[in-house]
Image (tube, rainbow, N blue to C red; front, side, top):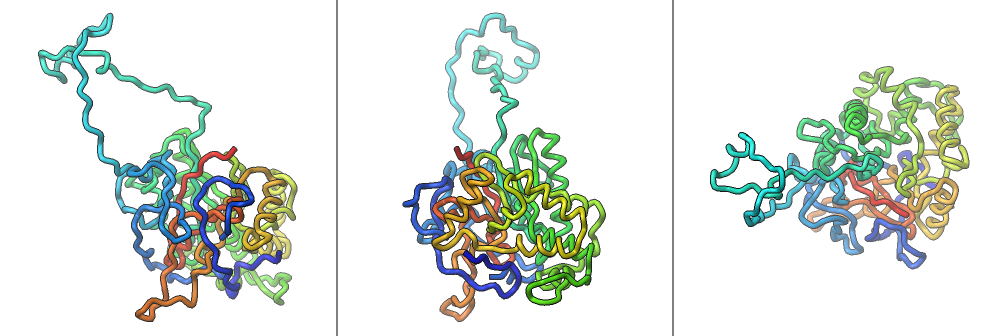
Length: 414
């Protein structure tokens, strides 16, 4: 099928419904699921109910995970940027204390001065008073989380990460051995793209020190910013006539404040990002396109090819890479499952997890719909959207168009 473009002017897709499953299903799984942008810089995200995961066919939220416990690592809840700001990772009420009958102390137990100060004088210590620390399996990875497109909305990002228990109130890593992947597009459209990059770089160091990790995938807007900085107004070969990276960057939400604050360390970090990664059966990409296949038949070969293009620094070659990785909508429609299977058969995994195409556009919920008062309806995003017979999972909640910045835990797929 012909894939769409990310640049302004792309058309809207058909109305599709979100599916209620994290895991790939069989061929009877049911139905599957334009331009980015719309919300002005600095505008707050639309308020929501603060607890959402997948949407069922009616749009009602469906939470994967334990009811009553939202955001703690390992629960599987998907939380958006407008979740309970400043709330702790767990909202469950503490359990009532269990009354343990007194028993003889274990053999060899001898009360210490600390014991006698902390318990009543007539209390007999029992085995229940001794600390029990479960052994930690050093080979067991922590839970896996992914973050959709951020586009400079750093406050929404902090709120969503905190709601999932991944960072503390001061914005530092608090998730121990958890694994976190950002699916790219850190800059453009929103107010603080460089601040987002700084936060991701910070969390990468802090997570590694705690035994986990925070890593990122190359998005098309990273390619665009790198090209605009390096090539500026240099003409490049374009199917639409003479073009330049700088003109395309401005057209697609480039923020002068980001360009002014861009440093060599940011450029180096972005230029070394991988284009794809496979973990726990999830094939992580930024764009919903099969164009990745043009650059290699293995993930390592494809990542090396993309890095090599950026290192060579040929403007036309970089433009062609940017153009291909801005295509979208490969996994929707009748041929969508086949396209997803082609990627999975080549690179491995059971489900493609991508950003890039906002869920409101995949659902056809943007444009032309108005309330009774004549106001355009705000897109409703209840969480990540599984489609293409559950072979694809969309993670761009449309934060730039009053949607949600999505952070979700992914279960291992086997």
